[in-house]
Length: 179
Image 1: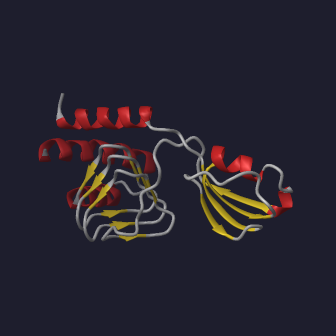
Image 2: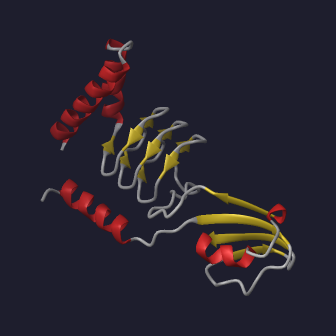
């Protein structure tokens, strides 16, 4: 197997074997049912506060509270891969970019709003990932890809489906030649 195939298999195995969770943040008013499990974070007092944890652990705690005393936030259901913690990434990441864990982002990269970057993708230093771009797992992006994308976008600007096809083929060819 090639290195890329090994990485892809590693990610497939990781996702298949990962514990599936439904992370929630619950703001509540009232007295909770039972003790707070160690894997649930609680903020606030005895009768008002927030709980952060997996829905299967939090739901029993709030089961007897009236619905008007509970506000629940969640972004995924039975997810195997959480979102990337972006706090220590030396890059510009705009709001609305969705980036999964185990993504490598090089220094001074720019990730525009609406970009979706899946587990295992690698974004090189000083690379820009534009609005609405979708990067699958185990993809390598570096500044040369942006140049290729810009050239084909200019040439085929009024044919979006054809653009995507040409971009995909060109990126694959550049990646093969570059490897």
